[in-house]
Image (cartoon, rainbow, N blue to C red; front, side):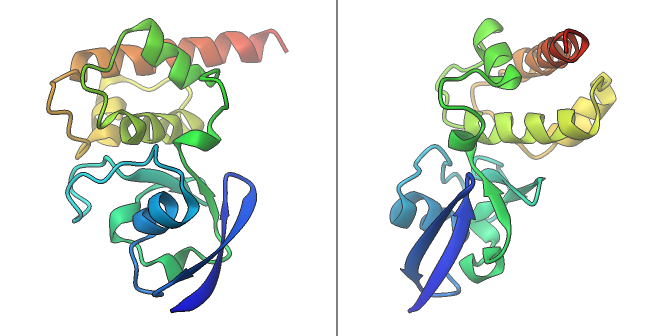
Length: 159
């Protein structure tokens, strides 16, 4: 066990953990942020996607020791009240059915829109590849990403 300090959602959290523990478990079990979900444990489904230094990563396959001195953002860090444009679009387009994969989907979509404000269908497909939704809401996910891009564009033009 080691004392490890993680910067999650702009707050420092010191945890006692095996340095090899997957970051997912430190976030969920030790810090108590349960929005990030466990899906497969082998970085194949995307349910555990978070941002590390602004990039989407699968937290189930990253040792907690690797996250030291990194900026980590979880679904809880996007907004306190679902006011982030991607969250607004997800609600507007009624994306979730069971909802289990949605935090990972939202985190991947948010990262996409940070680097590409107006993604094509091809861009969306590439960014969301490997994010599995067992309910099959892929058409609504694509529609929500486009809606979020529009919301972000409107907000930018009113500034």
